[in-house]
Length: 249
Image (cartoon, rainbow, N blue to C red; front, top):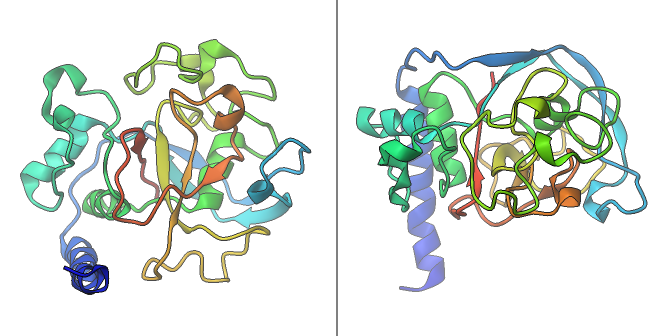
């Protein structure tokens, strides 16, 4: 089957999945969330060593929102599968009792969006994610400007994904955990260059294009798990073994 034909088939299915998820009444979600107050913060970095796609840094106003304290776990995602709205990821770890509190991974952007809608939430925008991770003082990491190994699962130590909340000292200014390392996290935003502007179409959920991932993962070096580092691994259907998500509202 030609690629153009395949994509033509996938787009209607993708649109149907989004509409179906939106139409499903949300379930009661008991996940702890942290509140992020409205106000300006610095998005991006002008550090000479920062990646070019992090520049220029700019002040952005973000409305009040809340974000999950932890990444969505295998156990919670399994509940959505059993209830019907969510589809199974290709990895079998999601239903392994010994991996219940690990963040669910190998989920596409659409799968993440479907789950968040199932619990009456949404994916965070790129700006929301960064503010939740670094606060308003422009810090490099959730806890400050210097990397400290005991605060994040990064640098290939211990060499695997860990249970959510394993690094209690790594909390962000608002109390969000694991926003540096462990697994990458999907955001709702399209990958576009800075300066960040929410009015330029990057927050259009129906637009085609790569979506932003944030946070880095367990095997990335410290510089790659900074709060400002951003990437777009691939299109919304792609699944990566160190990519998960958390929800916001």
